[in-house]
Image (cartoon, rainbow, N blue to C red; front, side):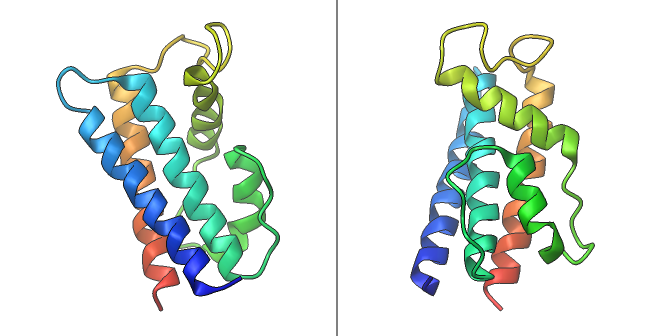
Length: 133
């Protein structure tokens, strides 16, 4: 695919990251922040796959996307499987009725989404740098 598609993925990822940052303000909206963090990471991984001409699956499963793109991280960025799993799980929360998409402890806490945000920001920065070379 063209560089335009890759840039579109990154622009959309940046928008999700910006939205997550704004939604962390008082009062924070943890589950919505988590969704935007998940979307940021998903779009970054899909941009990376697109760049390497690997089929981009229609999935929101970050663990699956990470497996497909792991080889391109060159040991420079650790994709924490626990965070990937938590983000994939909580993504469903804003899309479906309660009982679906919640973490085992229920809604994500503010501290958890701060961790999600920091992780998403690292993934975004890494992918942006790698894909701009």
